[in-house]
Image (cartoon, rainbow, N blue to C red; front, side):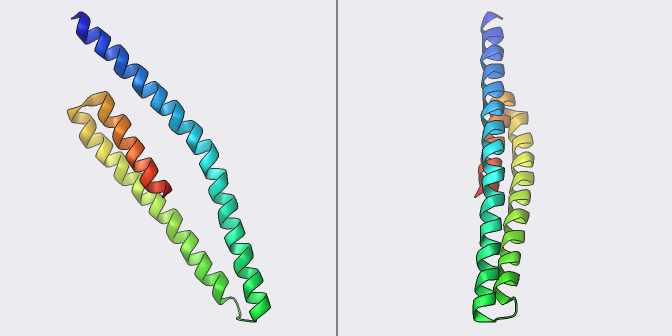
Length: 108
């Protein structure tokens, strides 16, 4: 029984620290992604104006940015589903590991 209690405390510590780390990463990564997307749009608009292409680069960039955000959302959902499935086999580590994989997959 004592080993089970110690294992539960270790798992709780692992999950809490993983959540804190991922929360911090999210607070940093989201604004960086927004700034990067804004820069991409700015460069595309500037290129369209200089080359007189009528917004072609801006449209392509918009599609790329929208696709990137849609991919991030889909990877997040897949990571959540995988974490729930794996978490049912190995409760604390499964949720933490698969949540991390889903988050990183979405970020890429």
